[in-house]
Amino acid sequence: MVGKINGFFGVRGWVKIFSHTEPRSNILNYQPWWYLDKDQWKTIEITNGREQSKTIVAHVKAIDSREQAQHLLGLELYITKSQLPELDNEELYWHEMTGMRVVNVDGVELGVVDNMVATGANDVIVVKGEKEHWVPYIEPFLVSLNREERLITVDWDEEF
Image (tube, rainbow, N blue to C red; front, side, top):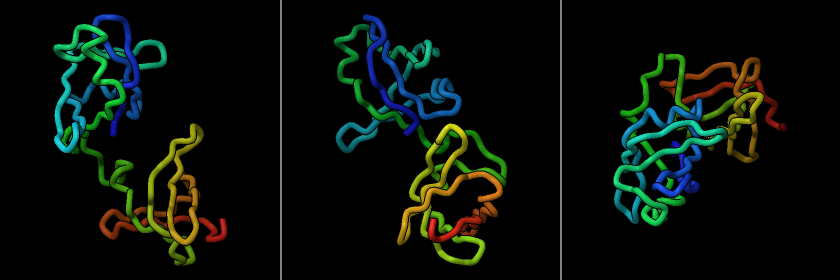
């Protein structure tokens, strides 16, 4: 999910978007957006968008009033993997890390990556195993990441 429609902006069909992209305005670079309607994927195209104060606002094609935009409120917005820019070999998107095994430098299996959390200071890997571990995604805690083996090695005590 790259964002969510969470409000109206004005009276001419513009909507507010909560963006999960970094920076926030990058959501406007991905077109079309996808959403799930019952069990069918549908697209939304925007004709205009911009950063407005601390939010993103966009005009959805063929939506010209608040009444028409009403059914869009709460929609979770997605993009396809093919819309993402290619990363170099050393980088991964967060969604690619989900399910990777995590071991500490002593070889103790801590669990698998459940999700990632942006804390402001640094990102954190949430590892689910016998315990839940919140491991900072920075050196010196992140020792290595092996994409092929889907294995992350961390310098983290199994009791934390």
